Length: 206
Image 1 (tube, rainbow, N blue to C red):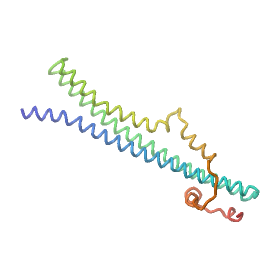
Image 2: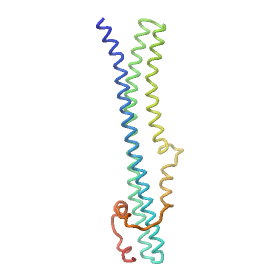
Image 3: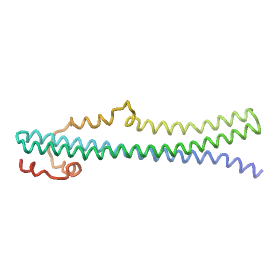
Image 4: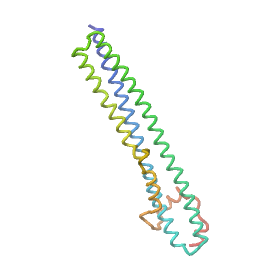
Protein backbone atom coordinates (compact mmCIF):
# COMPACT_ATOMS: atom_id res chain seq x y z
CA UNK A 1 0.00 0.00 0.00
CA UNK A 2 2.78 2.39 0.94
CA UNK A 3 4.71 1.55 -2.22
CA UNK A 4 1.66 2.17 -4.39
CA UNK A 5 1.11 5.51 -2.66
CA UNK A 6 4.68 6.66 -3.30
CA UNK A 7 4.55 5.51 -6.92
CA UNK A 8 1.39 7.54 -7.51
CA UNK A 9 2.90 10.51 -5.71
CA UNK A 10 6.04 10.40 -7.84
CA UNK A 11 4.00 10.01 -11.03
CA UNK A 12 2.03 13.14 -10.14
CA UNK A 13 5.01 15.11 -8.83
CA UNK A 14 7.25 14.71 -11.90
CA UNK A 15 4.94 16.43 -14.43
CA UNK A 16 3.98 19.03 -11.82
CA UNK A 17 7.61 19.98 -11.25
CA UNK A 18 8.43 19.96 -14.96
CA UNK A 19 5.46 22.19 -15.78
CA UNK A 20 6.31 24.51 -12.88
CA UNK A 21 9.86 24.98 -14.13
CA UNK A 22 8.58 25.39 -17.68
CA UNK A 23 6.18 28.10 -16.53
CA UNK A 24 8.92 29.92 -14.62
CA UNK A 25 11.25 29.81 -17.62
CA UNK A 26 8.49 31.18 -19.85
CA UNK A 27 7.67 33.98 -17.40
CA UNK A 28 11.28 35.05 -16.90
CA UNK A 29 12.07 34.84 -20.61
CA UNK A 30 8.96 36.81 -21.56
CA UNK A 31 9.61 39.45 -18.91
CA UNK A 32 13.24 39.94 -19.95
CA UNK A 33 12.23 40.15 -23.60
CA UNK A 34 9.66 42.80 -22.73
CA UNK A 35 12.23 44.82 -20.79
CA UNK A 36 14.64 44.73 -23.73
CA UNK A 37 11.89 45.72 -26.17
CA UNK A 38 10.79 48.61 -23.92
CA UNK A 39 14.36 49.87 -23.58
CA UNK A 40 14.84 49.63 -27.35
CA UNK A 41 11.66 51.60 -28.01
CA UNK A 42 12.69 54.24 -25.46
CA UNK A 43 16.04 54.52 -27.22
CA UNK A 44 14.29 55.15 -30.54
CA UNK A 45 12.05 57.82 -28.98
CA UNK A 46 15.01 59.59 -27.38
CA UNK A 47 16.93 59.55 -30.64
CA UNK A 48 13.94 60.96 -32.51
CA UNK A 49 13.96 63.93 -30.12
CA UNK A 50 17.71 64.29 -30.53
CA UNK A 51 17.49 64.18 -34.31
CA UNK A 52 14.64 66.66 -34.25
CA UNK A 53 16.83 69.11 -32.38
CA UNK A 54 19.66 68.54 -34.85
CA UNK A 55 17.33 69.06 -37.80
CA UNK A 56 16.21 72.37 -36.30
CA UNK A 57 19.82 73.46 -35.91
CA UNK A 58 20.49 72.56 -39.54
CA UNK A 59 17.73 74.95 -40.56
CA UNK A 60 19.03 77.70 -38.28
CA UNK A 61 22.65 77.43 -39.43
CA UNK A 62 21.88 76.50 -43.02
CA UNK A 63 23.58 79.64 -44.32
CA UNK A 64 26.79 78.94 -42.41
CA UNK A 65 28.49 76.29 -44.53
CA UNK A 66 31.17 75.41 -41.96
CA UNK A 67 28.72 74.93 -39.10
CA UNK A 68 26.28 73.14 -41.40
CA UNK A 69 28.92 70.60 -42.44
CA UNK A 70 29.94 70.11 -38.82
CA UNK A 71 26.34 69.45 -37.88
CA UNK A 72 26.01 66.88 -40.66
CA UNK A 73 29.16 65.16 -39.43
CA UNK A 74 27.82 65.02 -35.89
CA UNK A 75 24.49 63.66 -37.10
CA UNK A 76 26.42 60.89 -38.83
CA UNK A 77 28.46 60.17 -35.69
CA UNK A 78 25.39 60.19 -33.46
CA UNK A 79 23.68 57.78 -35.85
CA UNK A 80 26.59 55.36 -35.46
CA UNK A 81 26.29 55.60 -31.66
CA UNK A 82 22.56 54.99 -31.87
CA UNK A 83 22.92 52.11 -34.32
CA UNK A 84 25.50 50.40 -32.11
CA UNK A 85 23.21 50.56 -29.07
CA UNK A 86 20.14 49.60 -31.10
CA UNK A 87 21.85 46.56 -32.60
CA UNK A 88 23.04 45.48 -29.15
CA UNK A 89 19.43 45.45 -27.94
CA UNK A 90 18.50 43.23 -30.88
CA UNK A 91 21.41 40.90 -30.12
CA UNK A 92 20.38 40.69 -26.45
CA UNK A 93 16.80 39.95 -27.49
CA UNK A 94 17.96 37.16 -29.78
CA UNK A 95 20.27 35.66 -27.14
CA UNK A 96 17.57 35.67 -24.47
CA UNK A 97 15.09 34.06 -26.85
CA UNK A 98 17.53 31.29 -27.76
CA UNK A 99 18.37 30.65 -24.11
CA UNK A 100 14.70 30.53 -23.13
CA UNK A 101 13.86 28.27 -26.06
CA UNK A 102 16.64 25.82 -25.15
CA UNK A 103 15.33 25.54 -21.59
CA UNK A 104 11.76 25.08 -22.80
CA UNK A 105 12.88 22.30 -25.15
CA UNK A 106 14.77 20.65 -22.29
CA UNK A 107 11.76 20.59 -19.95
CA UNK A 108 9.46 19.56 -22.80
CA UNK A 109 11.76 16.65 -23.59
CA UNK A 110 11.64 15.61 -19.93
CA UNK A 111 7.85 15.79 -20.03
CA UNK A 112 7.76 13.64 -23.17
CA UNK A 113 10.00 11.01 -21.56
CA UNK A 114 7.80 10.92 -18.48
CA UNK A 115 4.64 10.62 -20.59
CA UNK A 116 6.23 7.80 -22.58
CA UNK A 117 7.15 6.01 -19.37
CA UNK A 118 3.64 6.26 -17.92
CA UNK A 119 1.92 5.23 -21.15
CA UNK A 120 4.35 2.34 -21.54
CA UNK A 121 3.56 1.11 -18.05
CA UNK A 122 -0.19 1.43 -18.61
CA UNK A 123 0.01 -0.47 -21.89
CA UNK A 124 2.26 -3.18 -20.45
CA UNK A 125 0.11 -3.87 -17.39
CA UNK A 126 -3.41 -3.06 -18.63
CA UNK A 127 -3.27 -2.98 -22.44
CA UNK A 128 -5.33 -0.66 -24.64
CA UNK A 129 -8.23 -0.28 -22.25
CA UNK A 130 -10.13 2.73 -20.94
CA UNK A 131 -7.45 3.32 -18.31
CA UNK A 132 -4.82 3.76 -21.03
CA UNK A 133 -7.05 6.28 -22.86
CA UNK A 134 -7.64 8.26 -19.65
CA UNK A 135 -3.90 8.38 -18.98
CA UNK A 136 -3.23 9.44 -22.57
CA UNK A 137 -5.74 12.31 -22.39
CA UNK A 138 -4.34 13.39 -19.04
CA UNK A 139 -0.79 13.48 -20.40
CA UNK A 140 -1.85 15.37 -23.52
CA UNK A 141 -3.46 18.06 -21.37
CA UNK A 142 -0.03 18.91 -19.96
CA UNK A 143 1.19 19.96 -23.39
CA UNK A 144 -1.32 22.80 -23.59
CA UNK A 145 1.02 24.84 -21.38
CA UNK A 146 3.98 23.79 -23.54
CA UNK A 147 2.21 24.97 -26.69
CA UNK A 148 1.14 28.25 -25.08
CA UNK A 149 4.69 28.91 -23.84
CA UNK A 150 6.26 28.54 -27.28
CA UNK A 151 3.41 30.42 -28.95
CA UNK A 152 3.58 33.33 -26.49
CA UNK A 153 7.32 33.82 -26.89
CA UNK A 154 7.18 33.47 -30.66
CA UNK A 155 4.37 36.02 -30.92
CA UNK A 156 6.24 38.45 -28.67
CA UNK A 157 9.34 38.77 -30.87
CA UNK A 158 8.15 37.53 -34.26
CA UNK A 159 7.67 41.08 -35.55
CA UNK A 160 11.34 41.82 -34.87
CA UNK A 161 12.92 38.76 -36.49
CA UNK A 162 10.44 37.51 -39.08
CA UNK A 163 11.83 37.71 -42.66
CA UNK A 164 8.57 39.36 -43.72
CA UNK A 165 8.73 41.91 -40.91
CA UNK A 166 10.20 45.36 -41.48
CA UNK A 167 9.77 46.70 -37.96
CA UNK A 168 13.49 47.26 -37.41
CA UNK A 169 13.82 48.99 -40.76
CA UNK A 170 10.78 51.15 -40.05
CA UNK A 171 12.16 52.07 -36.62
CA UNK A 172 15.26 53.41 -38.27
CA UNK A 173 13.54 55.09 -41.20
CA UNK A 174 11.28 57.20 -38.99
CA UNK A 175 14.38 58.68 -37.41
CA UNK A 176 14.90 60.69 -40.58
CA UNK A 177 11.40 62.18 -40.29
CA UNK A 178 11.05 63.33 -36.66
CA UNK A 179 7.73 64.82 -35.61
CA UNK A 180 9.18 67.49 -33.37
CA UNK A 181 11.75 70.07 -34.44
CA UNK A 182 12.63 72.28 -31.48
CA UNK A 183 15.57 73.55 -29.48
CA UNK A 184 15.41 73.36 -25.71
CA UNK A 185 17.72 72.86 -22.74
CA UNK A 186 15.98 69.55 -21.95
CA UNK A 187 17.87 68.01 -24.88
CA UNK A 188 21.14 68.22 -22.98
CA UNK A 189 20.82 64.65 -21.69
CA UNK A 190 20.17 63.44 -25.24
CA UNK A 191 23.36 65.10 -26.43
CA UNK A 192 25.27 63.38 -23.65
CA UNK A 193 23.93 60.04 -24.86
CA UNK A 194 24.25 60.34 -28.63
CA UNK A 195 26.71 63.20 -29.12
CA UNK A 196 28.84 63.53 -25.97
CA UNK A 197 31.41 65.86 -27.57
CA UNK A 198 30.33 69.49 -27.77
CA UNK A 199 30.73 71.07 -31.16
CA UNK A 200 33.12 73.98 -31.11
CA UNK A 201 32.07 75.03 -34.58
CA UNK A 202 28.43 74.96 -33.56
CA UNK A 203 29.08 77.13 -30.53
CA UNK A 204 31.01 79.62 -32.67
CA UNK A 205 28.04 79.90 -34.97
CA UNK A 206 25.66 80.94 -32.18
